[in-house]
Image 1: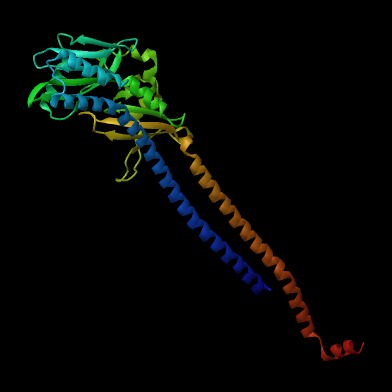
Image 2: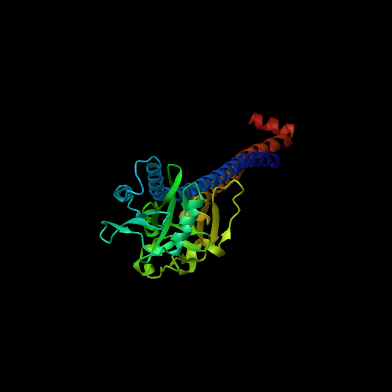
Length: 357
């Protein structure tokens, strides 16, 4: 009897072992797939912001390249101011994120085309004397053969970035073309492309200044922008995650990761900060990124843990069922065994007597 029960229990154990092995392999594969999906989703999210920044600044880059080309090809003569103004106005009209464009000649003269408060194009001579940031930008552009980015600056409580380049005609340096790009507009653009309400897109200038953030869309923040302080610090933004960025723990994602992951806080209240460093916009790197509550990306983990729990439950039920069946099957076998044992111990006379009755 014991041997039968042991055998049935062994069969149940083998079934449980097989189910457990399948569950382990499945859980391991699901964990790996979930990690890969989360990593891929995070990379795509950062790439979305990266491309959003590139799409926002591309019209300014194209404007500078266009003016440099038409001047170098002789289609516009920089000494002919009406021709130059027409070219600048036409270039500015197609790029609403550009607040103004200016041409600066070596002799100190120049022309500026900008947008007025009502959106109308305003043409005016370059201001004199030139602001220090303009002087530095012209010197840097003249020293470079390519399109360059200037330092952030502020006009009328609005943070701006300058992009431009040296212009040559007939092989001679004839001036510098520059365009001002509104960073408030960049904040609005990135905010508009967010795919999740819980996600906040941002761009940092280095590690301690804010280039773009939804908070910059609030009028109160505009009053903090001054010519001496064109960008706000992280601690000045009404966003506890951004303020905590320098202290956020950096997660180890491996050397092949295309972004950095920082975790701020712990448990269910933690926030995840995903950033990517970009060196394409000047000497100071930009950090483009997003931050989201950890709960918003934990649903996939909860579903995975739920499926593993269901698998464990089924395995336990299988083991219990195997033990139950082993007991049920053993009972009739035990009865037959007992009956056979009693029959074997009866005397021949008793057997003969029972047959003659």
